[in-house]
Image (cartoon, rainbow, N blue to C red; front, side, top):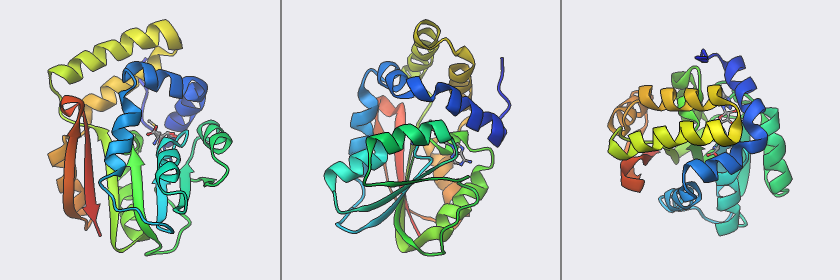
Length: 222
Ligand SMILES: C[S@@+](CC[C@H](N)C(=O)[O-])C[C@H]1O[C@@H](n2cnc3c(N)ncnc32)[C@H](O)[C@@H]1O
């Protein structure tokens, strides 16, 4: 049942769960995930015409929330799951969604004001390579918002248990959600992540915990 974390396996897994992805996110987060995504975006000073990459955009939640707050922002979404991208594109016709592996982006150096990544890094087979790509494409002074699961604590354990129960009842794809819980457990803590980001050249700007620390956001500057 354990999924080995190769890019192809990850891509196929997200293709398989794409149709129910948004429904399951609402369920397993008890509706919190949209609020957390919205609050984390407030950590950035997004202006009209800011150039933003939604990296590992999935079904486009962050792109959607950015455009809702700042309709003139120039947003591009990138993901390698064509089924997730199809849903993103059906939600937003004012965002360009591109199929690409985040570790090999076809963008010029120093071309984005912001890169946002929600719940993506944990799923990337080669996260270090992805971080170097994010750094490369950011303009000097540009900012990287990283959002994912945070510290492992009592509330995080409750979350893990409810994910597995909800997945069994509503998804029928236990493998993907078993993978989610395992990937969450082996994911670095927010403080360890900041050190990893710094190794790639970023400078720490801010961090914030949400939902009793189950979710955490970090803002890093180039
Ligand atoms: C958990 S989803 C997050 C989607 C969205 N950002 C959100 O917050 O709901 C992770 C996404 O990362 C994408 N992904 C994982 N590894 C990738 C890679 N190497 N290149 C591009 N996308 C990748 C998957 O296809 C999936 O859509």
